[in-house]
Image 1 (tube, rainbow, N blue to C red):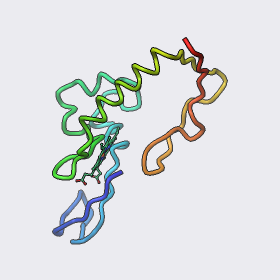
Image 2: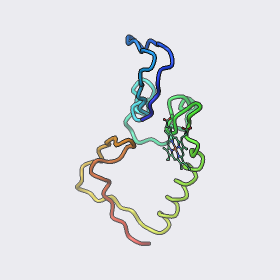
Image 3: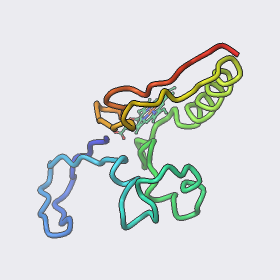
Image 4: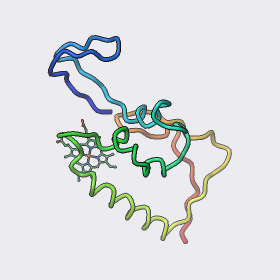
Length: 120
Ligand code: HEM
């Protein structure tokens, strides 16, 4: 989540926002908003490729305080996954309930994601 402070009074739908109020922005909810996405809860990484994703896609925030490490993180993630997949085989351990997302500042699976990891 990201927090912003209102620098001026504002109206947000039917709510009055006072100057100095703190607003919490949840990318998790914006990324799953039923008015923005056709299949909001589906696992569909290609959804971000669509042109309209630019506005409502904000994993790294937006504006002047956007994550300065965004470019690095996107490369780092791909390199890490490529190295792990090259060295290990990952299989889903069946019998566990599907991952339940929980927010602890960042998002994670409440009971973890159970995988069998074997060396290739
Ligand atoms: C997948 C990985 C990452 C995600 C999802 C992420 C996400 C974010 C988000 C959402 C913000 C903005 C917070 C806000 O607006 O209140 C932020 C800020 C920031 N991030 Fe990242 N980040 C990631 C990786 C990194 C890395 C690798 C670095 C540094 C090498 C980094 C450095 C920073 C810095 C310095 C800020 C503060 C920018 C400012 O306030 O002006 N981040 N990040």
